[in-house]
Image (tube, rainbow over all chains, first blue to last red; front, side, top):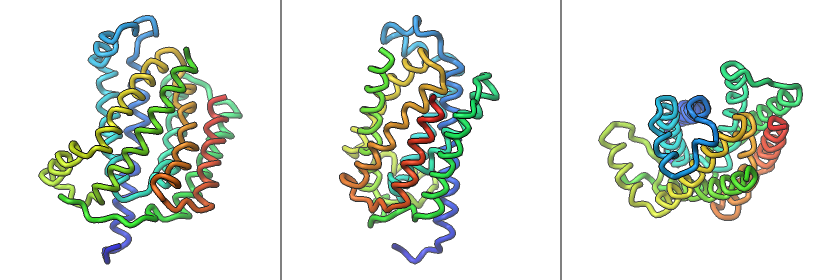
Length: 139
Length: 120
């Protein structure tokens, strides 16, 4: 590891994680909002055409941002760290579903949300993002 | 049909994300966020075999997810994909050789249980 201040890596990790979580949750939400019923997705051409509906396009753009920010995060953080920590997005998706799509959050779902948050807290607060040796990027 | 799509999505997501992590580790830490440097990183990554394999797997996963979303509620389609957490954590340890300590196993287990509850 280099002699860089730990706080700058921590800040970079926090910002990147936030972008990963938000772009994923809102990307999924806009996809759901823009998608037509199952009957309209029968040929490959239907899938391509659907991509150009405004809400779906916005969803796809956010999901592209999600992939790019996730790749950036994975360039210095472990997969077994990134997975649990970014799962806070599931909580966000449940809340978005309730607020904007009128999907209900039952007691069981709230219990699940609490478990997810506990898992996120354990991994993000208790373990360092990286446990393996990496080299400098070539560019 | 619903569960076939779930299986297809879980399999391709797991393969894609492990390949992506392997590819990014191979590339090394991204530190320079100026546009030129990002452009060069993207050009390098576009020739990274792991990243290309990941992109193909993720494309399969994406279209399976899209079809699933059109058939089910968002609050079913998203949580059910959490099965990948368990599979990917195991692969992170044995394929990517990460040091998955007790806290990480506990965290991953809580997340999988939580996601299962959310999808009930």
